[in-house]
Image 1 (spheres, rainbow, N blue to C red):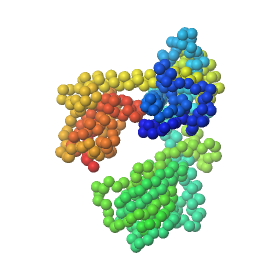
Image 2 (tube, one colour; image 1 turned 135 degrees about the vertical axis):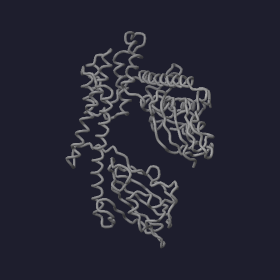
Image 3 (cartoon, one colour; image 1 turned 90 degrees about the vertical axis):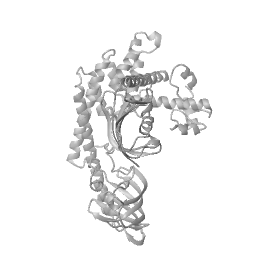
Length: 513
């Protein structure tokens, strides 16, 4: 929910209920005051709707911002990184239950709740097969492999998943195209690969040829039912993916066709990891002879129409259509279970510092679903996660200030302790303005020199972070610069490692658009 949406709602339910009535029925026995919790030091939570007042708006915005911060911690940290911090917060108090009222059972429920929150990072670790391996590793005295070996295993697991899902997707694609080929009203362009059907005839004498420039509207749906739609103007036929280019030849203005495309004809320059076909409804708005100049900004597909990525195609059953798919599934399952086991070993080593491992394992096995904990414990957990956010925020602040203090006298200060700038090489092109869209090549690192991002692309100065908006402003096309960006001027809406982090970005301004 955006801030604008929050401010325009006159009355809204809380806790993700669909109506005030539904929330009243489910919470009438435990209605609490958000204001009271907030004054007590808890992150405020919305309970039982609100009236549109400035105080309510502030409360809602605080709730939204608090939840975003907690989510950043969950997305930007592993369970193994958070767990020791949880112990340092709660374990010293276990010896004094009379002073805090936080006993071992509460801690077990909190651990289970934390696992539930973290599972969305890596859901494969928490399916039935993986959970048993996790619990087995939890109770084992075996030490987990070194970090590099675990990273290698994670990479191997990811590649195995991609290969298996690609195999499943290819079976789905082939079955769909075989079904389509039985329809006599559908034109076969390439057997088992490309088909189209005329939905509406066009008019006029001009047809799509190899040298045509097209303007079209489209509706896209892949064979996993993901959809997209939009328009594409003044694009030469040669810039379309091969499957579309072959299926639209002969179309006239006003004509509509439905296309079915095998991934082999999706994009010649892209690998076929997804192996997922798609269908496309196209309407030809305009066609003309000639070609768009080579420096045109036209692209083969508009945003959202790229060749589908690997889908969540893991089937529930075990009815495989090929031995290869079964082999890939078994490899994927074996690696997934091995990763879960080592994850359990790692957590077990941490838990042995103060808990009965057998009791922990029994509790987690019995509480396979979300562990219900008291509102106070949930708030304790949220406060703990929020404290991690502020601790990490402070660490990034210290890193930034330390780096700023070590910069040379030639480095330009654009905002004290917030944004600094080095001109590596001055360009000779036009200057960047406030509303410019610039094409850049960039390399972004953290304070220790680790590369966080390296790419080339467009930056719209009206819709980028403050550090880039002010750092690029006034620079000339062709310039090479280095920006030192405080987290406050950086990507506050993203999670780690880029979000809320001190960044050093080296960039070349290729051109202005």
